[in-house]
Length: 103
Image 1 (tube, helix red, strand yellow):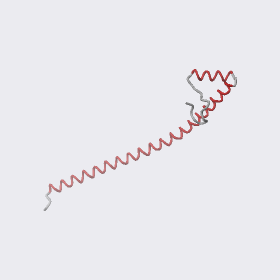
Image 2 (cartoon, helix red, strand yellow):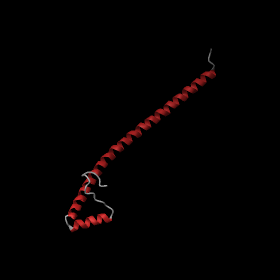
Image 3 (tube, rainbow, N blue to C red):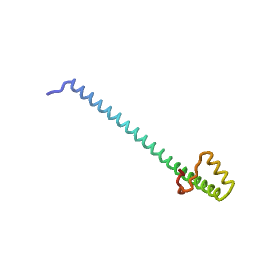
Image 4 (tube, rainbow, N blue to C red):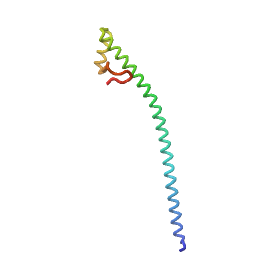
């Protein structure tokens, strides 16, 4: 059975379509890999910032617990600070473990 020119043109069209599909999928894959790398970089940068924020939060919690202890021991200035914090909606949890946010 011999091929006709119409059969050959259909084969070339199918081959061109398959090649175009491979190029589109390859381009999409490269774009996705670049986006993934950019997101991974952003995630690493944010992880460092979050660690710094947790450290600052732990220091503030420790300071607040210290002020609350001074207020409980009778220091009027510390009692005023604790009262102001309570009026502003800040709760001091004296039983919280150091480094953990007060609930």
